[in-house]
Length: 124
Image (cartoon, rainbow, N blue to C red; front, side, top):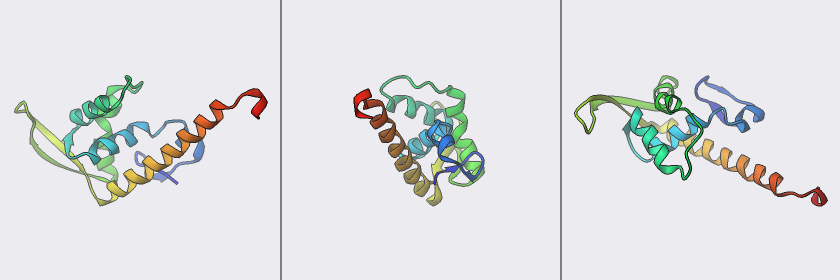
């Protein structure tokens, strides 16, 4: 069962399938590609998405910070490409493991939703 990294507890199927953990999952995916700062993680997510996501940028920007508070993400201070102070986030061992778990769980939910949406009246 996936964990709600913002609350640190297991979440039920209804909450997990509602997209409640989407910013967290996307932040985990962005950080799985390598360390970056909060704004960079949001930019990475937007670049990976084929269509604009319906998630507020603030949610994406804060997700690595919240993940750090819960443990799966570590941070260090440094300078950004435009010489501004920034906090750079990267996945720890727990974060790498959880990223895979969360990604697989979401993939299963999406496939299940797709099967339901493809059914016609006569197939039920």
